[in-house]
Image (cartoon, rainbow, N blue to C red):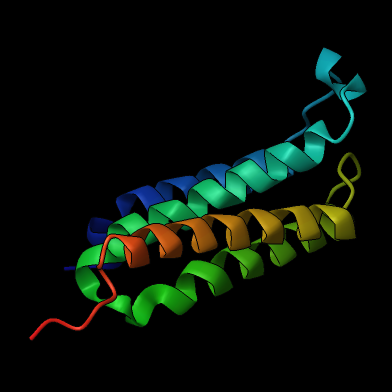
Length: 124
């Protein structure tokens, strides 16, 4: 089975993130809300991380590292592309930090839930 069949949600979210990150968004009424941009960044990357968790649940926990590494690496690439390949978007360190925070929070909460549910315990 190929990657697109095994991870359709992850692939779809990744494509959406790339498209949204590189498109011109203009200004909205929410721009005056403090830290709304950072909250959106954290939410988007937390969602991506949760999608990877969900789709890799049947493939064992060798993919746990990808739940953290892939979204943060994607975030870094997108910030670089925004900074150097667009004139209407800015690559920001705080956006990368917000994206990483979303990934870490989603991974931590999911890990705690799985641990509390006994999913990580050894079964004889």
